Length: 119
Image 1 (cartoon, helix red, strand yellow):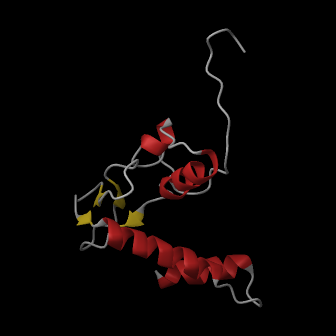
Image 2 (spheres, rainbow, N blue to C red; image 1 turned 120 degrees about the vertical axis):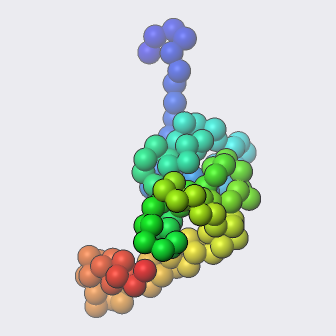
């Protein structure tokens, strides 16, 4: 490490969307992260916190307008349609719950395919 070079540390796994990661960081380490990924609407093009646009035939990505603001609205990158924060969070919470409802007899891939065809 060179003098003056920034050192970073990964506090949590990166597979969670910004709204989950920032909340965990705040509860466990008492800070609100403002790294590049947390501040980017697309989470550095991972789209972990994105929804699929339901407006017509758009199918664009609906992402938070201000990712570091917990009450932010969401909007589609393609058509601009807006989704309120409460609706977006409800949809994401329901999807997270549904992905955990795996039938013990299903293979993980089968479970994920059933979930994806459902939505």
